[in-house]
Image (cartoon, helix red, strand yellow):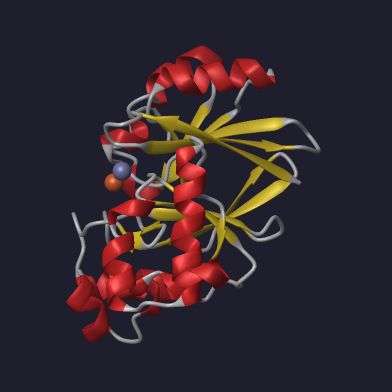
Length: 236
Ligand code: FE
Ligand code: ZN
């Protein structure tokens, strides 16, 4: 069993999410995308977990800036795509598409979704039905194309769409309301209205919108709902 604790970082500026994940069976902890050290250390201390790994989705500074501080404090190992070994701070262990990586008794599968950046990966835990999508998939939108093409983004989204509907996803930023109005204008539906209402309610309580199931996201996120490259290109 994997427990997931979202940690809001760079609040009000970039609204990143780092995640403390804990394999309950072995109490092994890991931090996904350490954006800012202080809130992460606070959460680790609160739960009395010393993370063993740092797992990065991609190299951008707002996901890796606290790699070295967290690594130094907890003596943990930094794991990322082997393609990013030269540009992820403190890089220790390389993973790649199709390979798996164990956090205690919990097993992650690595899915390469190069588009937002070359080398961006998903951390997918099939037994726990959880996927960490970094800056590839956000609630109701997707990440910008910094190092990739719309063709690559289409391919990346097809990989996400191929995952089961009951998998929940955790994105790299709280961007739910950024595209919500436009999404609703594009394709109004009762389900999307309910999604947006629920999101506003959670956000007003200072809570993350994640997790949402991929089944709901596939219906409500216009980028995921795009049936072909032409449709996706009109949104990007
Ligand atoms: Fe990014
Ligand atoms: Zn980011």
